[in-house]
Length: 263
Ligand SMILES: Nc1ncnc2c1ncn2[C@@H]1O[C@H](COP(=O)(O)OP(=O)(O)OP(=O)(O)O)[C@@H](O)[C@H]1O
Image (cartoon, rainbow, N blue to C red; front, side, top):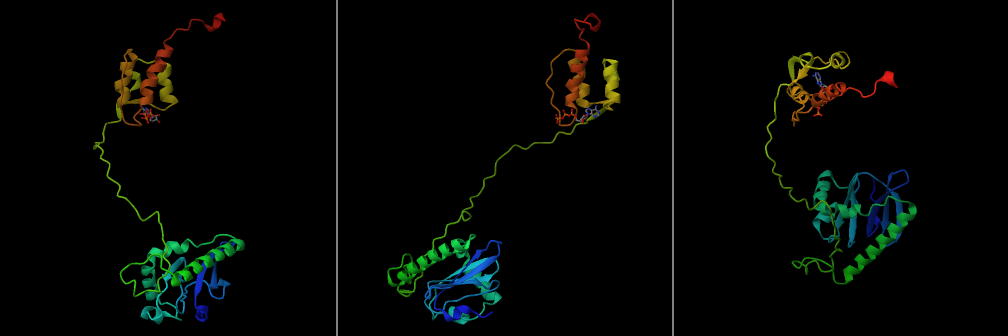
């Protein structure tokens, strides 16, 4: 693909999503102040020719790189000028611009053409500010080597991220728990207990239960004798019937004060 940026001194490439969520690219020349929309997508590199403020490079799909302005005498920049970046160069560019990626994605526009125009205005404003920074005092730049790069400093883009600070999560101390292994079923049947025949028949025929579990064997006789009990047993071991059977048994033993024939 021919690089249309070659004819421009300063370029700005951004992308947005149209109404069908297809990514479109907006290529705008800063000096001409006109937009070239529907720019080519895909593997693409775009370099300013000389003293541009910020050059955005679309290295590959889903990756927006933000490369700062570089001196036109910079060999790295000169070598890559007017050429598509190779995969190796792209990898270098990725690593170099890793910290800037989010700032570039911050320029994403998911909205309408109206929103894109607004975005373009904002971008132009930023670029104007950037252009003024060339003539005025740079906002932020390291003191070391400041004189060397005087007049060539790019505007500082401060990038904030939620994901930069990942504090260590301390280990929560918890006591070691040894798993209880207990025998669930016994060979003892419900008929061994002093239960009402209807209740035993219901257990056998309706619930298809004949032998007691361990917790039932230990609990039911105690509760049938009228004592209180605090029972602890593993889940699914039959605690519900352990207190339910004595409960039904005690209800069946209650003599009704009024008989049906008397009503
Ligand atoms: N003696 C038994 N023989 C065969 N199955 C039984 C016996 N007693 C209970 N069950 C069945 O075992 C299953 C679990 O019983 P239950 O819900 O009473 O256990 P649990 O100890 O109360 O469980 P959780 O602790 O979760 O409340 C139920 O499907 C129940 O029908």
